[in-house]
Length: 169
Length: 139
Image (cartoon, rainbow over all chains, first blue to last red):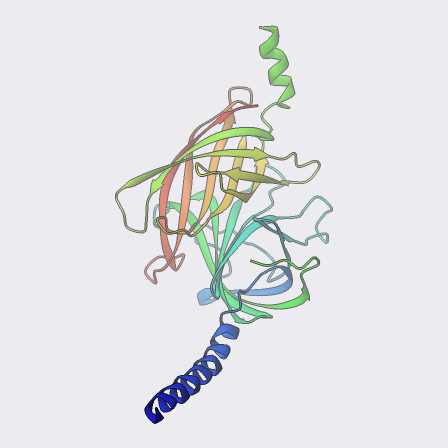
């Protein structure tokens, strides 16, 4: 009888301990989201001022807005300083604390090269991200694995506004 | 003949906007020599006076995800994120091609695949691969 009480007591204690240990883990597993507005600052790795084929991006700071509409995750770089029709668009996904987003650069005519940007990063905090991004220009370069001229940067980003309509992963 | 002429006009020359079937061939994982074929329906929304446009992509399983596109002349580029799932590696996909045939065909397009696996020996710092794709306009 006494041993039964002891077993019940032990079960209760372990249950309480188990719950108290699980709670922080659940908090840590909160899903991240890019939804919202971010100021992202990039700098070329190794100090390169242009791609190996001489293509430049021209601006280090990017005001980026990410949204989620159902399963569709989209983004836009605000470049009204350049022109009202210049709104580079992108898509994104999150996997744990890692994220990936891909943007299309803007190209006003066929004279110059164009390209796409792939960003890979992680959430340092819910309001701070860091990672690397690579520009793939549509200029052929036999020295790269893809065969396209590419230029890699590191970046950090700080959230400047939360999602407008409660976006999530 | 008249129908063909009308159809060509309706596509605004070589503008990508409309619905397409894309057949995309690419390795099924980093360093894999096995080719995977993904057939998707791409619904390309008009871009108005913007240089960029949005698109929705529906894969074989009916899953829908976002894409973005740009076009200068006949040259188009379509980008989307390949979602992570149990049997497929996630990746970023960049498709490049030329709209031909009066706006109904993208032939011999090229694909850049950027996997999620880090690789310090790759200039992109992640594993990459190449693929091909073809586009056929549905409407």
